[in-house]
Length: 233
Image 1 (spheres, helix red, strand yellow):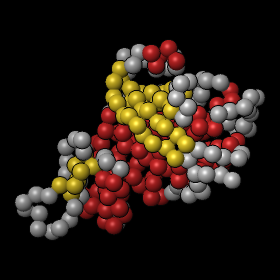
Image 2 (cartoon, one colour; image 1 turned 90 degrees about the horizontal axis):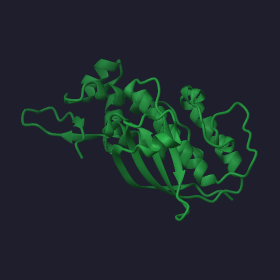
Image 3 (cartoon, one colour; image 1 turned 135 degrees about the horizontal axis):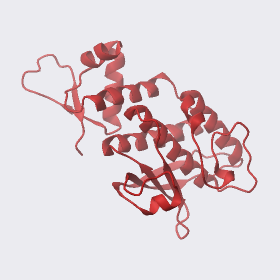
């Protein structure tokens, strides 16, 4: 019997953490990091099969996952052509590690950056608690990508497909990030991306639901068209 994972984001911070560079040499000591503490509850009868299906779902959604690299224990290396697990794995740690990689992939898509590094750690004295430390130059984008990663990874491992609707959120977030001081409306986003207004409206509403955007009203808006700006929360 497989129970879908329950992942709770306990803490999200944006700060320097020089210790991260000692755990992953690709992380610069002076690089600001997204720090996230997760609690994961998950019971699964065949973790390797479940994690393999999740990896395939992520690869189908974003082929760039296939270019990710790992420097930790071989058993936890992700997106290998042939999974090789020379020792038993802890399923919740492996899942946390995949969430880290999802945050990295989504951040690169939104920010247009070529590389990003991170590290996942398990707390020895608190079973089920995992800390993620990920390079992050924009805290708003980092928070968004963490929330999307948790939501989409847990949905995918439960059998949901990731497709156009999810991809649209990343595309729209990149557009919004490039114009951070603008008021974003469905007609403007649709015009900029060559989308229909309904498609743009769904993407903006999805970003609002993920906490990346706030909806604003202004005195001269007589159209009833929603308008959004990047959240300051």
